[in-house]
Image (cartoon, rainbow, N blue to C red; front, side, top):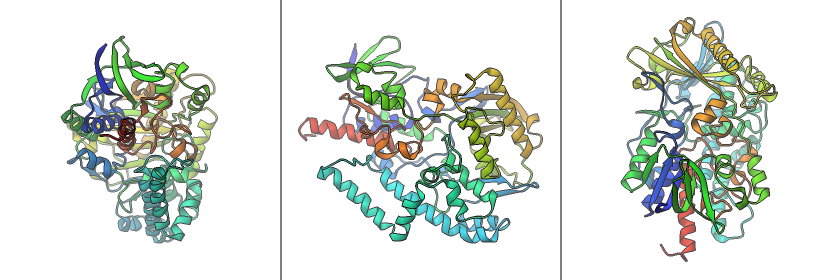
Length: 533
């Protein structure tokens, strides 16, 4: 058995890196184990053909809570919010583009609806207020609704004050909006279908539901946490590279003494006398540790790495019932030039945002219906980004990379598993859909690679290919994430913690779960030592 560590952290994503850095900063001896050849997790770059790279799962930078950056002493990791942030095809060679600046967005919307243009500033202001309240929730551990402890009640009282701080009108609006469908929210305020499609697509990000499903308004608010004021999809991207945050946090961890081992896959978390004792690697090597934190998703950790004899059957059943439901395929294109989208400003800066190719919420809903019945959609909802426009190092000079995300392409199909023929057919449909708004696109394609949720699961270790590590639906957030009764990062086995996006506050909150998990480990350690540092 190798040397004993205070903590072993499983996984090399941002959350695991943050947890490791925070623990090392507190004086603990920390080992981080990553099964791939490099850290970075979902932001890890993939060279899918020589000279062409992409981060297939990257949609935006997410929200880095300022408290996390302060605790780590993180600086110099800048983000860019593109302008426009999103554009949708609007027929007859036109596009509706939404600027990151609310005033310019009003001018763009006015071309399609004067009524909607007038309503836009108030709408973006309201979304910013409501998502701002979520920010305050996301800086705290998930609330313990059964607590009687004064120490636990004080943070809850702080949240209650922030809720009241919204004012009566906005407080009522928050409580009304969260359970609604994103379509209801938009139908209440706007008349133009293109505008509703541009905004409503955010509400079905990484979930297997359509815009008419209850709770998708919450997904919209969650995806807006940390967005630039007045902007939809305004979280932007890291200026230097997709993995800039991961690299910066890894460097901070190294300065505090974190040992990182790549190519080290954990096969088993060891337990003796009802307490974690360490891990065993795939090759049989045993590593002793008083604490193990896993950035892998709850199913990978609790069903795959822990012997079930140490866990209550009811708890295991709850974990098995977590909804992952990976529902999106990615297609990586190596291109011989920059595609031309008639009706859009063809400058690289104008193509740095997201192109959402569904022109109506009905189109997105029909795509979601296919997944509901276990089918790969014949007309998937497709969103396109050009990483090589954001970062020139993603492709050789004069060449480009395009990443398309297509929903609905469910992990589980009614008529059997994915086949290579089905994967290729989906890729061809996506190529044809892009060609409808970018004539000549197929001729630019040098190479394309289709990643179904099955390939995403295999490559990134994500159950059912779900980047969220559990859908961000109303029954899987706050004190119900990952499961009710285990939302405070500590699992039923003493010494075992989760620190990934499968815990509160969920996906898209860069480093938030890892930071809160590390704080819980440190707090528990102090309590076990009688409050001594």
